[in-house]
Image (tube, rainbow, N blue to C red; front, side, top):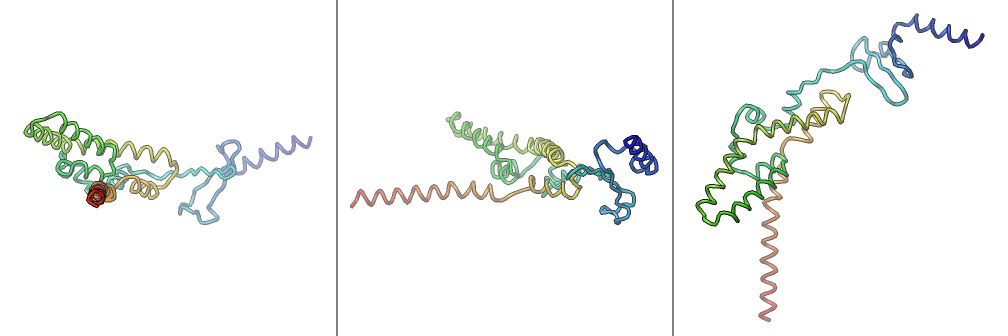
Length: 208
């Protein structure tokens, strides 16, 4: 008899409180109206179970804004122009500037194969020019497509994040960096200096 009375009381309380309708089983409904609503809305509620909170209110996610944050500098040029002159003339350095390390390694390897395959300097120069033009013509298309794929991964990896948080994550993962091209220039230069210094030391040892 006591158990039946308790069940009837619970059913009566749920019917009297319309906000509990449709609450998933095992979740507790919280209404934030009396607390001024953390999100600034007058009718927001949350389902809570333990430390996990799922908000009823979903913010509109603007994918174009996320793409703009991910690309960063020269967003308009990259998304609207079919040819990228910086990628064409700077080649591997520009790819590193855009944090495309694997692409830069691929271009470096192709240039190396061109140098070893074409023994005639004229044919080698023509092949390098063709590769440069192809890089400039294809970069924007493939770069934007990869940026969109990375943005989808970020949205999947961080569900429930606000638009501002997603933009920050996109800017951190994308954008540009001078570190990689600077290292690409400095490392061979430092290696050359070390090789020259070791050669001089070895020469002095032979003389002495």
